[in-house]
Length: 119
Image (cartoon, rainbow, N blue to C red):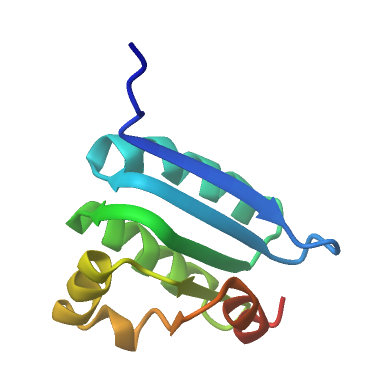
Protein backbone atom coordinates (compact mmCIF):
# COMPACT_ATOMS: atom_id res chain seq x y z
CA UNK A 1 0.00 0.00 0.00
CA UNK A 2 1.65 3.20 -1.15
CA UNK A 3 0.66 6.51 0.32
CA UNK A 4 1.20 9.78 -1.43
CA UNK A 5 3.33 12.21 0.59
CA UNK A 6 1.47 15.21 1.94
CA UNK A 7 4.10 17.54 0.42
CA UNK A 8 7.01 17.39 -1.98
CA UNK A 9 9.15 19.95 -3.76
CA UNK A 10 11.24 19.78 -6.91
CA UNK A 11 14.06 22.24 -7.60
CA UNK A 12 15.10 22.94 -11.19
CA UNK A 13 17.86 25.45 -11.89
CA UNK A 14 18.21 27.43 -15.09
CA UNK A 15 21.28 26.49 -17.18
CA UNK A 16 23.13 29.60 -15.96
CA UNK A 17 22.11 28.93 -12.31
CA UNK A 18 20.73 32.46 -11.99
CA UNK A 19 17.18 31.30 -11.19
CA UNK A 20 15.38 28.32 -9.73
CA UNK A 21 11.94 26.90 -10.43
CA UNK A 22 10.51 25.20 -7.36
CA UNK A 23 7.63 22.87 -8.08
CA UNK A 24 5.38 22.49 -5.05
CA UNK A 25 3.29 19.34 -4.80
CA UNK A 26 0.53 18.53 -2.32
CA UNK A 27 -0.19 20.71 0.68
CA UNK A 28 1.93 23.64 1.81
CA UNK A 29 1.04 23.29 5.49
CA UNK A 30 3.17 24.15 8.56
CA UNK A 31 5.11 20.86 8.36
CA UNK A 32 5.89 21.52 4.69
CA UNK A 33 7.00 25.08 5.46
CA UNK A 34 9.38 23.73 8.14
CA UNK A 35 10.88 21.49 5.45
CA UNK A 36 10.98 24.04 2.63
CA UNK A 37 12.14 27.20 4.41
CA UNK A 38 15.71 26.04 5.22
CA UNK A 39 16.18 24.82 1.65
CA UNK A 40 15.14 28.19 0.23
CA UNK A 41 17.33 30.07 2.70
CA UNK A 42 20.30 27.93 1.69
CA UNK A 43 19.76 28.97 -1.94
CA UNK A 44 19.46 32.60 -0.87
CA UNK A 45 22.72 32.38 1.09
CA UNK A 46 24.34 30.85 -2.01
CA UNK A 47 23.43 34.03 -3.92
CA UNK A 48 20.22 33.05 -5.72
CA UNK A 49 17.76 35.92 -6.01
CA UNK A 50 15.31 34.76 -8.70
CA UNK A 51 12.65 32.27 -7.62
CA UNK A 52 9.70 30.84 -9.55
CA UNK A 53 7.18 28.72 -7.67
CA UNK A 54 5.32 26.33 -9.95
CA UNK A 55 1.98 25.76 -8.24
CA UNK A 56 0.53 23.37 -10.84
CA UNK A 57 0.35 20.46 -8.38
CA UNK A 58 -0.17 22.43 -5.18
CA UNK A 59 -3.54 21.53 -3.68
CA UNK A 60 -3.45 23.82 -0.65
CA UNK A 61 -1.42 26.75 0.65
CA UNK A 62 -1.91 27.69 4.29
CA UNK A 63 -1.15 31.05 5.83
CA UNK A 64 2.40 30.03 6.82
CA UNK A 65 3.07 28.86 3.28
CA UNK A 66 1.86 32.15 1.85
CA UNK A 67 3.93 33.99 4.44
CA UNK A 68 7.00 32.06 3.32
CA UNK A 69 6.52 33.26 -0.27
CA UNK A 70 5.86 36.87 0.74
CA UNK A 71 8.83 36.83 3.14
CA UNK A 72 11.10 35.64 0.35
CA UNK A 73 9.73 38.35 -1.94
CA UNK A 74 10.61 40.95 0.70
CA UNK A 75 14.03 39.36 1.18
CA UNK A 76 15.00 39.60 -2.50
CA UNK A 77 13.38 42.99 -3.15
CA UNK A 78 15.69 45.20 -5.17
CA UNK A 79 18.00 42.31 -6.03
CA UNK A 80 15.70 39.75 -7.64
CA UNK A 81 12.13 38.55 -7.85
CA UNK A 82 9.67 35.91 -6.72
CA UNK A 83 6.90 34.84 -9.07
CA UNK A 84 4.34 32.05 -9.15
CA UNK A 85 2.93 30.18 -12.11
CA UNK A 86 -0.07 28.07 -12.94
CA UNK A 87 -1.80 27.89 -9.54
CA UNK A 88 -4.78 25.56 -9.16
CA UNK A 89 -8.16 27.24 -8.83
CA UNK A 90 -8.20 26.76 -5.05
CA UNK A 91 -4.71 28.21 -4.57
CA UNK A 92 -5.42 31.10 -6.96
CA UNK A 93 -8.60 31.80 -5.00
CA UNK A 94 -6.56 31.99 -1.78
CA UNK A 95 -3.96 34.28 -3.41
CA UNK A 96 -6.72 36.52 -4.75
CA UNK A 97 -8.69 36.58 -1.49
CA UNK A 98 -5.60 37.61 0.48
CA UNK A 99 -4.63 40.13 -2.24
CA UNK A 100 -1.27 38.40 -2.63
CA UNK A 101 -1.70 38.47 -6.40
CA UNK A 102 -0.64 42.12 -6.06
CA UNK A 103 2.61 41.08 -4.31
CA UNK A 104 3.39 37.79 -6.03
CA UNK A 105 3.02 38.12 -9.79
CA UNK A 106 1.18 35.13 -11.29
CA UNK A 107 2.00 33.81 -14.77
CA UNK A 108 0.37 31.08 -16.85
CA UNK A 109 3.64 29.22 -17.60
CA UNK A 110 7.06 28.61 -16.11
CA UNK A 111 8.70 30.34 -19.08
CA UNK A 112 6.61 33.48 -18.58
CA UNK A 113 7.38 33.51 -14.86
CA UNK A 114 11.11 32.96 -15.47
CA UNK A 115 11.21 35.76 -18.03
CA UNK A 116 9.55 38.08 -15.52
CA UNK A 117 12.26 37.37 -12.92
CA UNK A 118 15.01 38.15 -15.39
CA UNK A 119 16.13 34.52 -15.17
